[in-house]
Image 1 (tube, helix red, strand yellow):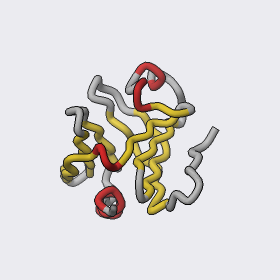
Image 2 (image 1 turned 90 degrees about the vertical axis):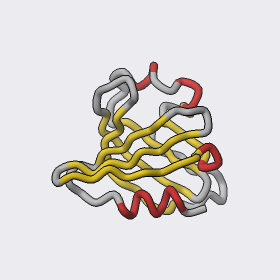
Image 3 (image 1 turned 120 degrees about the horizontal axis):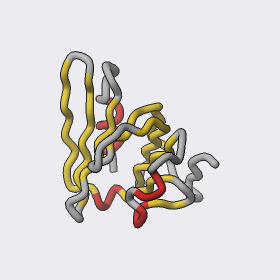
Image 4 (image 1 turned 45 degrees about the vertical axis):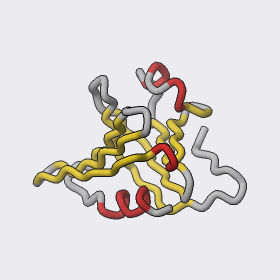
Length: 111
């Protein structure tokens, strides 16, 4: 499979990170942030196919940055999370464990 960029789309960063769906659980995968989209490809499809069906494209969670209304960070000693709030009220949470999320936040905020 793999994350496919659109023609002319510029990748700002790529991370191996965990996605925490609002319904609970933890899904590991690849996060790619471009100038126009946030893309997450799970390592496995277990349970992912039923989540965010309207935001999926070829098995990848794909969110236009124009839908992002807020980006916040939650930091503790062993957990660094990025919370992305979307215009429809959905919240996406990416958890990088003890690793920094500063570059992820910078890439998401870059327009």
